[in-house]
Image (cartoon, rainbow, N blue to C red; front, side):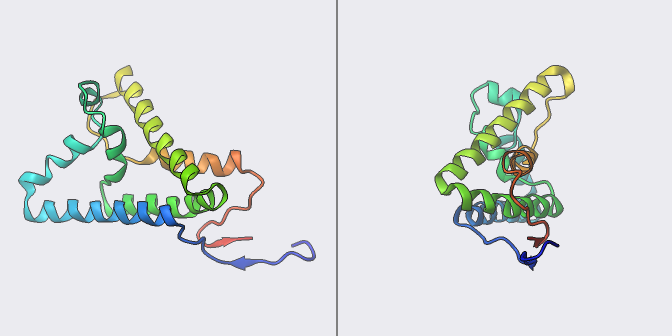
Length: 159
């Protein structure tokens, strides 16, 4: 390590909107789990209504372009996505401010949905989708390419 630089082990802060997005995703996931246990007949409509179903979006269900991003298929899926949102999203929100961060986040969510729809119509399937992988990868891309000069905290380790 070069002289004069310090090394710290710290986690990024929970910024205002990152915290709200994480809490919203966690709350919705636990509602899904509760519905699955208590009312499976109702729970089976959650993904077709709020997940990304390309054929339905083309029929006017445009809310799915955003709502799919709040659904998660498993606890592991939720944890990995929320960890990524926290690690990269907190830095983005701190650097850009809340308004620009939210604009970027939802641009990525809708953009990923549109790409998913294009891929689905290219012949790779039209099943309901719940991944937030689009926003996940865009956050990582932003951190690695757009803000390449930043040192990234990874699992709490970073300069």
